[in-house]
Image 1 (cartoon, helix red, strand yellow):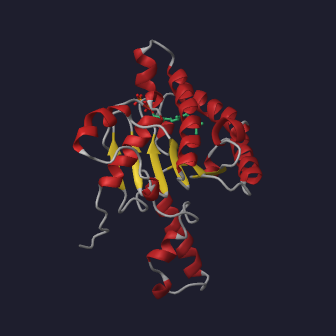
Image 2 (image 1 turned 60 degrees about the vertical axis):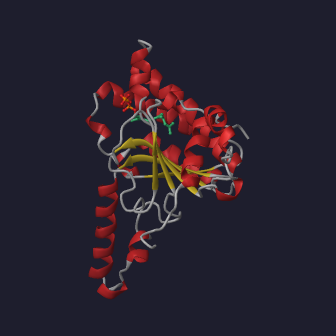
Amino acid sequence: MSLFKGFLKNNKDKGERIGVDPQNIPTHIAIIMDGNGRWAKRRKLPKILGHREGSNVLKKIVRYCDKLGVKYLTVYAFSTENWKRPKKEVDELMDLLLEKLKNAEKELGGDQAKIRVIGNIKGLPIDIQNEIKRVERVTSQNSGICLNIALNYGGRDEIVNAVKEIVTEAEKGIIKNDHIDEEYFAKKLYTWYMPDPDLLIRTSGEKRHSNYLLWQMAYTEFWYTDVLWPDISEAYIDEAIMEYQKRNRRFGGV
Ligand code: FPP
């Protein structure tokens, strides 16, 4: 297991724990992979090469999280708001996503990862929809980490969809008002099959929620870094987890 060297150097004389505690690994980590554009701009490269490098880093981080024992990793690849970006960038991102999905078993997940996509899948190009179906099917029996790719995902959109589904059930007489509680509602979300995130990592210095997992992150611990996503390495994941392990999670209690 790699250690974050800066932490090691700074804290070894203070008797603090060095490295990640394997007994307290977050079950579910969510990531906002921000900064691909700035990474490319600093190198005078086309923006899509920033996204491409970002997807290479993702591959490394999925494997590392799996090795640490993280059970679910949910990454924000394309939001419902990202359609507002220039057409060229959207087209290039869709091409990159299609390419990565076609090779997802090798390029994203690794041997044992289960890959799922959350978001408004019907709003995506048909070739991407087909690849999503294929990759979800072929990885469904895998026993390793569950990689959830948020694609055409928006937290508000997800909540509105859940409400519509419940209203339809009510109109058909399947449910009544007092059947609806938090647990029932959560089962209508794209994330129905997983626990809420324990830890959110956002890169590139932004400190916004950006319409990501709005319902699910009620009690998630946030960790931010100025490092751009393509510069992220395993050591930063260690740093985020070590910070998480120092937090006292009370979930509103004492
Ligand atoms: C934000 O950076 C990043 C995105 C909108 C796309 C994230 C996509 C990837 C990491 C690659 C593909 C992912 C998969 C799952 C194959 P930005 O463009 O907003 O960066 P900037 O703020 O520096 O411009």
